[in-house]
Image (cartoon, rainbow, N blue to C red; front, side, top):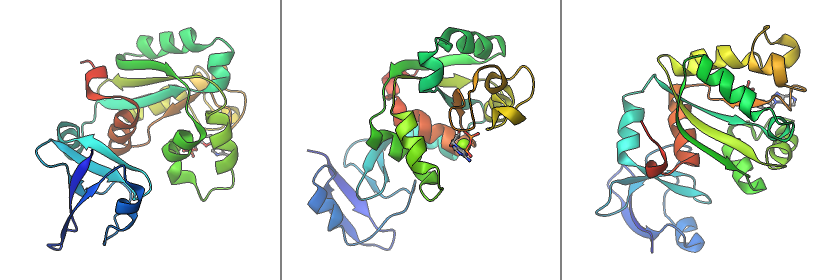
Length: 207
Ligand code: DAT
Ligand code: MG
């Protein structure tokens, strides 16, 4: 039972079971993307997401997020690059650029999980294609640490379109196209924290 104590922020409170779709849908107030909406009684977790896909996020990670840690980012080596055997070379480039790997796993995203991960892009015309591609084969997910991690990692991976990526970048070296572009990189400190928590349980993150 995942009974969660919800507060609307306007004094209204409800206790619902997170995994009971009907009780979630009947929650008498809405909540937006990435907004704090509830706390599981007696435990240090906050609920994020939306009514259809609520998920628990540990308070210690929330505190890091509030403090806006600037030394964390998240990456995935995408299905085409893993399938082509480029994972080792890409990991070498990441380490040689000064990033420390705090967590790493080989995993395969379901369509649903890929859709949730890229939900910010759901209105963009390539969303369906992106979700199909990202769930088409194994990916290597990593939580990375370095000073100025988000910006430095975006510099290391290069532009979204490999045709525009600078020489020596991961995408210039390994991306096949704008869609199949070898690696993901978080675009902000806030999203890095959310993406790390999306893929890793606290006990899977070292450092
Ligand atoms: P980035 O991954 O560089 O942060 P993004 O966040 O704008 O780029 O887009 C997310 C992913 O969606 C991107 O890595 C590949 C895919 N994508 C972006 N623009 C696309 C396009 N015009 N056509 C096909 N896929 C695209
Ligand atoms: Mg992006």
